[in-house]
Image (tube, rainbow, N blue to C red; front, side, top):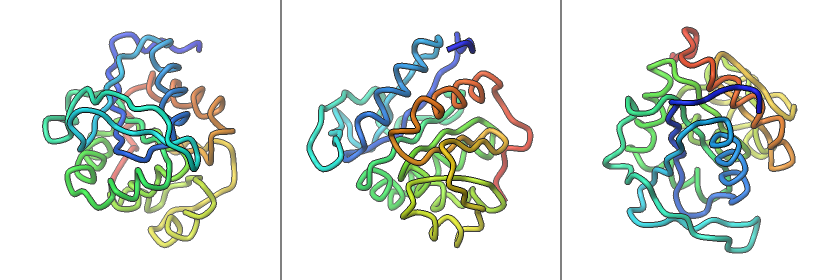
Amino acid sequence: MERNLNGKKVAILVTNGFEQVELTEPKQALEQAGAQTFIISPEREQVQAWQHFDKGDTFPVDVPLDQARPEDYDALLLPGGVANPDQLRTDERAVRFVRAFFEAGKPVAAICHGPWLLVEADVVRGRTVTSWPSLKTDLKNAGARWVDQEVVVDQGLVTSRNPNDIPAFNRKMIEEFAEGVHARQRTV
């Protein structure tokens, strides 16, 4: 990737049930662009990935959520998977962690079911986003404009629909993360 992320620290917020490829491929792209990545989770030791309906690999947790501080990171990645964001959106610590990135104007990238957590953090009102199709109504009810495109960028927020969109998602994520703080990244 052409953008340089040297010196950037990226938080990757997940819990058990995330879609493996939505963590591994963006994480690899971020690291190849020079970023340091950190898996953050309410789980303390490791998290279990899924490959659609089958268990995938486990990954070590770098920082437990209760020890993670949003101010220590330059950007946030939210992988999908159905169970992952559904569990995280019921964890007030996770919701506060996500919201803090928007309050600080830091770029955020969410793919597939990941935007469910954005709904709970109340950060999509007035934004154009995409997601897995089943989230369309939830996002619209939260005040977002939902579109069916492989990748959407709205003032530092990058969203994509599914694993097929990962190449476009990675390009735009790296571009937005390289730009850093977005003055118009906001909460309402």
